Image 1 (cartoon, rainbow, N blue to C red):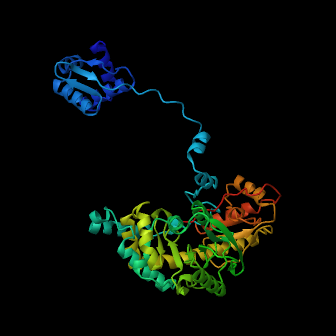
Image 2: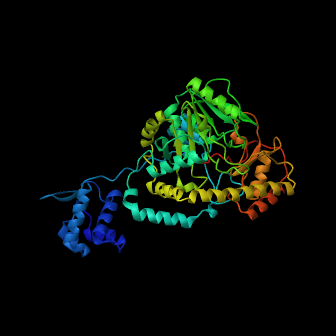
Image 3: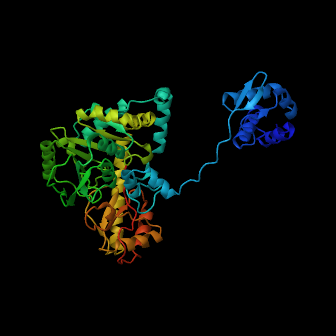
Length: 492
């Protein structure tokens, strides 16, 4: 046995003096055993000897030995003393390189998803990151007051587990709002509160798609939807978008994903004739239509268009919306309006993923809507964003940027614009060198070139828009490698 005064005193004195004596002694012994300084079977001093050597009470030494015995480090038997009961762990094998580790552990489906680059959102306003609302204009004080009131009245209840379908008052508020503002036909029993519209897409892909099923997707379209359905093994069939929205498909599909009110990313509106034709096709084929109404609240030239779901007479439309754009992204609340037959299966599926959304956030949002703050905030943001969109278009014209062609659109948080063929990569690199983000349109295409940018303006103040456009005016088009810009793949 090592000389106790030397071994124990050195170990003991290396520990933090602010920690209680018993914990310091336990930590010193654990470290010695793990490092192999005390091997398996090594006999330790009696508590009387240890206490004398370390100038501590025998009660403290006894408590430390008892603690380590309960943790499995020591064995104590009358007449045999105290011995170390475990061996130091063997040195770990060298870790494989990062690339080797990923290849060894990822499925082909997982590797394909990782290869898309994932979804990385800006942490602060920056020209021209797409899809961000203006958080500097949010009524933070009102939100704080409602939060304090909800905690005071229902704090204990809101801290527990919640209904996986969602907080009942919020579901009722969402159903009433959608019926009034979007013409959605539903009651609160059809509403499911989720973390994001992306979560809704993943749930629907899991619930409705088998490998090999066909999914119709707008072209160009939302990468988050493409990834969700591809991860379920679906066969993606693009529907090219023209001035009337998504074109009609030639064949059948298990599911059709649409952004009919404000097509992402081009901004066109799906015509009534095509809406009716797509609804008829879904009914005849037994398919589903997912209507993603991600930013329809922000229509500046007229009232928001009625939702496609309101035209559905056969229960084939699944309607999605999110609070990330109309309130703030870190709220992490969205909703799905489901045909009655899908509610229970989707809620059950949701329970094996994340259980439920945060109850406090749901309660605050419900009161924010019920007391009129939501409607007032929307009105103010429509006016603000409309003015910023108009300013962006004006500055592009005034600066004479002839190589950038804005596309027609009546709302949203960003503006789609096309570029000369072969110039996107070069212009994107030039903009990045000036600190300007120019999210790529080409990355949202499955067919053809489709070069351009998706310029976010909603989160930018007027002076930031003016300054950013002035920088764009210094760029010079040129041909280069395709696909050089960041992808605006995350909206929820």
